[in-house]
Length: 153
Image 1 (cartoon, rainbow, N blue to C red):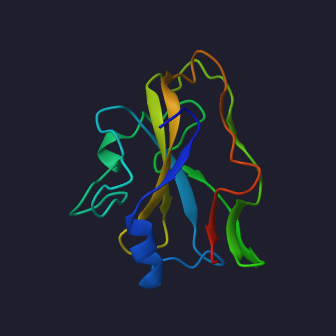
Image 2: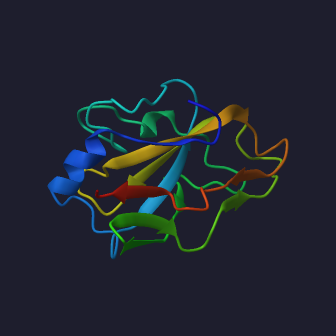
């Protein structure tokens, strides 16, 4: 996994089939975690605040500086064209300004559905950490073709 790559959790395919996500109305968030746990595509039941499976919220960076506990809201649209469904961020890339009281140990961003009952995690981005808000701005740039795409062929 390379820095900046967004990796979808394998469980996401199962979650779509069970209608756990409604991207037209659900609230998605990107939360930043340290390296106490390393997310992997095959993690079983990945979630934010899970009672079973992989729980990432126990590894969240400090609520300080420009970062708020629970993560940054990511307003999205879900569109389809020519058999390709795309999840896009409506406001563009995420930027946290440099802050002397901010976190210093960001390694991964966990994208999860805050509206889902179990706060199911969708995927993660490798920040190439440690990333520090104290050392400078933290920018998370989504792929120009969308956060993720699903192709039917």
